[in-house]
Image 1 (cartoon, rainbow, N blue to C red):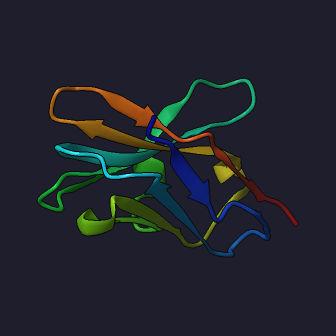
Image 2 (tube, one colour):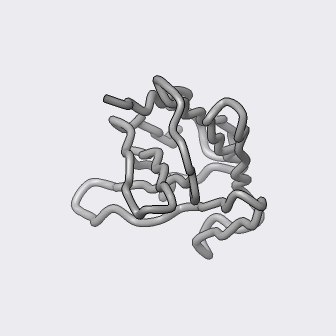
Length: 116
C-alpha cells in the first residue's frame, strides 16, 4: 500500500513563507499529474496547484505569483513553496498523485495556519 507523507505545515505570521513536501512511501509507476489541494474549515477541498510530468504548472488564481509547485520525478516527490502567506491561506493541505490510469493517491494532510 503506497502512502503519501506530507511535511512542512506550521503556524506562520502573515507575509511569511513555508515549504511543503510530499513523498511516496515506495515507487509509484506511471505517474501523471502531481498536485496540492487544500481544505479550509467549512469549505470544500479545492485545487491549489498541479504540475504535469513535462513541468506544466497550473495554479488557482488566489495563489498565482506567491506559490510555486515543483516535483522530483526520480524520487516521486512534490513540493509547494508558499510565499507571502495570508490568513486566507489557512487550511489543511493535501498532496495528490495521479497515475496515467486515473488512479489517485492522497496524503493525510498537513495543517497550515497563517495568523499573527
